Image (cartoon, rainbow, N blue to C red; front, top):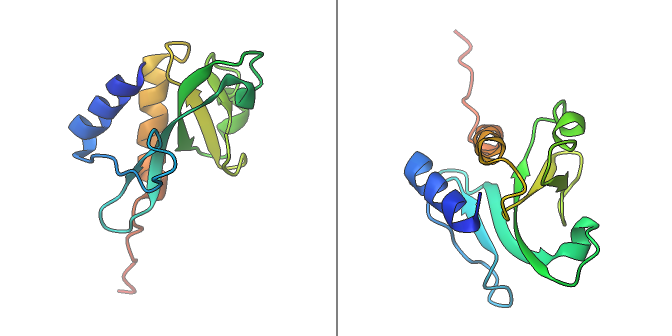
Length: 125
């Protein structure tokens, strides 16, 4: 899955377009819920070396919140890495260069969206 394919998936599935909160980093795009403003995806270009890949090249990636029970297993998938610049206990990073399966990235995006959405208050009745 590429950066553009993921952006299209998020737009079509959730009707959300990215915002770019950092002028210094124009390639960083944040997708957040409209009601609670929580992030569920952050797409960015980073050096491959930040993922432990021996290369000076840059790569597009997405950070996604993940179910903590899944993180150990999901990290064994191609193109999925411990979170870059986020809490590695709750987030993962997926490469957007085709190495991560498109269906895996979509599944992780759905999980991240669900984990960050506004919680419904329980009624006492």
